[in-house]
Amino acid sequence: MKDSAYLARCHKRLKEWGAPLQDWYCVGVMDTEEDSGGSFTCELCGCSRVRFVHEMSHKQYFEDVSVGCICAGIMEGSILAAKERERLIKNRARRRSNFVRRKWKENRRGEYRLKYKGDWILIYGSDQGRYEVSYDGKSVRQYKGKPITNFLSAIYAAFDLVDPPIRGQRL
Image 1 (cartoon, rainbow, N blue to C red):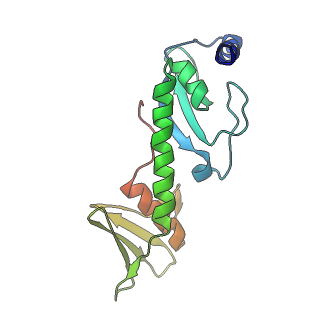
Image 2 (cartoon, rainbow, N blue to C red):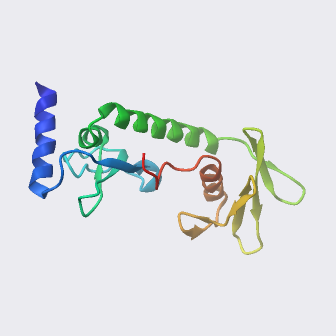
Image 3 (cartoon, rainbow, N blue to C red):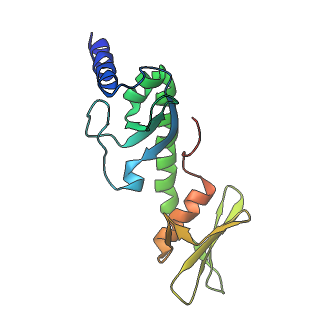
C-alpha cells in the first residue's frame, strides 16, 4: 500500500534524527508564497513543492521541524487535523489575494480608507514617504519588520491587521 510506504519513510527519517515518532504538535503554518515568494522543501520527506509549511514541535526534541501537510499529519497522528489547518491557510491566502484588489478611497486629507467587515481601515502617508495603517484601535508602521514605504506594502500590512497570520500558537 502506498500510504504505509509513505508512513514508513517518514518514520525512518524521524528515527535517523533520533526524534520521537508521535505526539508532535503544530505551532504555526506559513504560506511560503506570502513569506518568501516560492516553494519550500519538506524537511521530513524531501518533497520540494511545499507551499504551506507546518512548523511541528515536540517537547522532547530540540528543534522545530518544517514539513508539508501529510508529514505534519503523520507526526501528530491526525492527517485530518493537518488538512484542516491547510484549508484555513489556503482560505486566508485567497482572502489576501482578493483584499489587495479592492479599491481604496482617498479623502481630502490624503488618507486612504476602505470599509472591511463593517469597520474602516485607514492608511496614512507622511512627508518622509512612510505609511501608517490603522484598524480597530491598532496601528502599524512596519510590515515584516521594515518601515512601510509604499502603498502596496501598506495594503498587505492592513490585511495582516484585519486577518492575522496563523502563527505563534499551538494549533
